[in-house]
Image (cartoon, rainbow, N blue to C red; front, side):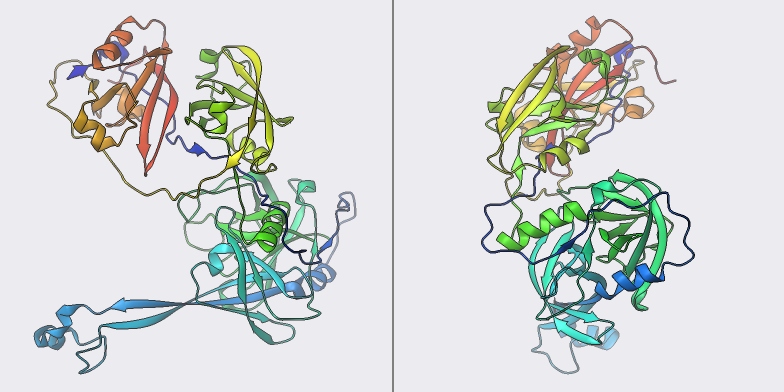
Length: 506
């Protein structure tokens, strides 16, 4: 067991999360059949017009295209054998039916409601994936005509929360698509849907922000570039239309940020340009194939920038490169700072994801990088994103006996066989595993956890616990640079962190 000197205790100020940069696109192979005929109007909105007193004409233009969706899922519940005992049946009753001792399973129908948008006269409908995901039966009701249809799922894309349905209809009132790229903060928008099953409703607000990310209900891989709006969005609005002042579809309402499960003025919609790309791929091929670069990444703050000789924080810092991936073959290295992708400036990780999303698997990508303060370039041929589902496995090491003394800090040990098995580290990983962090230390306040593996200190490799302690003793300056490996919710990766080498917890 090794302990860090107190002078180096200020460990690891950074947000956690080395999410695998499985870089993204919305194109599949060539279309197998032509998609639906959709109306598109990209004429810029008139922003210097006089204020209007009514949006009734806009609502009449768009609302007829918004439908109600009723989804049903059949849930199978197996009988608990305890209810076969007459004693338990006398106490609790028999939820599986009186006297039927042979019934081992019963079913329950669970229903959900949402909204959708007619995008073509022949019955294609856009909605949110979470409205229909896992459902056994989907009904679409068109309020104006009082008609109801059974819908089939053409395709669904959980990462963007977009789904496409099809009903057997003709001459349906299709909405006109707008151009979400032309939106500006402050533009007036209307949200149309079926909140709380009260029937079609319209609310008004403005575009509060663009390019937002939000906490998703579903775990795993997601693509986010949300339009934020204060137009009231409530349960049942999901999958409904967000339209501009001309009644053109510019977003699909998808979720809210709320402490009460109701509208608090922070709603999110998938931009229609993104949804349209996904829709076309789903209709033509039934799925959305995505590109894959193969890096772990993080955004840069003012503490990290000096260590990489960066004049700007706009870009993405490469934490790790997965062996054998396009990034590895392109010569990208940990510590590279990506500033441009295919001619587009990269502001942060989300910006890089969106830039890559405009490509296709197998396409060529060029990047501008900063490496050790010098500009360089890299070219990669994107692969296809592997279909993987991250599993939640919160793994921590069991700390060895810790020798407590006046040095209130961090304890480390070598990566032995048992520790590797517990952490499920890659076989080639070398470093020192953190076995104890005093809760009153700067390390704990900065987010250091047991189970983290220290790989580098000030760009020097750490092979074992002795090396980690030695490098910390030798470290000069008010801050040191540390690279760690961590597994979180089944996803592992590395991260660069800045360590305060002067301030200490009391």
